[in-house]
Image (cartoon, rainbow, N blue to C red; front, side, top):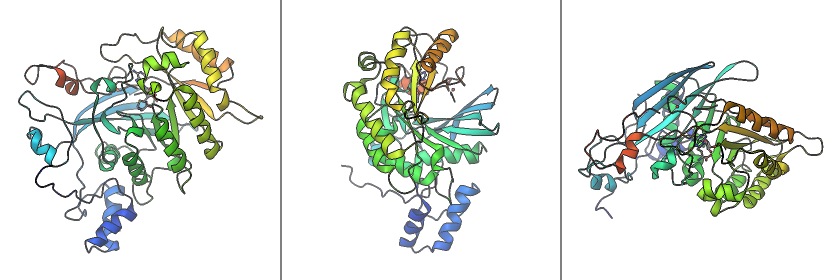
Length: 404
Ligand code: SAH
């Protein structure tokens, strides 16, 4: 243990207005002043009223990339979490900040997170924006097709750091955010407490005001975390939380190979816990994601096996299906062993699934050239930590992109 651990500041970021008012009250700040500060911070982007001693620091945007798509502009931005880069690691450990990226001299280099703003056209033709947020720096899940997995887990984000991504999108990038998806870096159910706390903030009526039905947690399929979600959605205000499951495989042998998590909880267990979620959630749609990888999971046989697995989520008793299958054409990660699928093969797979009675859509690819697309988040710089050489000799091209 370090000799003295500085106290963790109470925060305006990542808390509900109730929590903030309570923390202020403990410090003798009245609820009127507290509410004014909270509302100004979230609704006007004005941090001047944040009381002294409260955390309200927004990690700066250190890189951004834009890519034009037909709906508008996809923006990927990276925030740097460490306030003083180059601080010796031993000191950083003392203040509770987990490992960062090391230079050769043992100093922390950077701890960067990535978020993507994705323009969409809604069903009614209205333009909307979806913010894809990260829940961790890196990821421990080790999925073979995902760029982020190649970094390993550096650390989980705090609720403040998750909420700060919304704040940066809204008040630095100036974009009104309609939807939030936890589909950036990391596995949200590997950091469940922080993610749920952050969602409490993001949906606060006096704060970011994102509707619960417009927030989606996407998971690799940690069954323990999904059980926890099935309980959370039974608490008032949480029923409409969106849930997406990355299935990505038609059977256990393919899934075991692609996603190590499947060796812990197989597709049978996954199917049962998802059925339990449907029971408590009712008719709300559940998204099933399927990254289509040429030669790995894209045959017509695979389509048949997937349709069987999806059957409990299909049309029943004349009622609309609860499961929506979202086919994501594989976006090659750096050093990928597989190419992107052929457009015709994607169309054939989607058509086959629909024929088999599974309600299926193709996810449009956005941001692939900017490495902002699904599964492409992860900085070359962070991967550079594995390289031996002086700073600046890591692989070039921290190009990074998103799909809707
Ligand atoms: N850990 C969470 C959220 C992050 S990934 C999860 O697994 O759901 C968000 C989505 O992108 C997941 O469905 C994932 O399977 C998909 N994905 C990952 N790598 C991809 C890649 N290289 N190409 C296309 N989609 C990818």
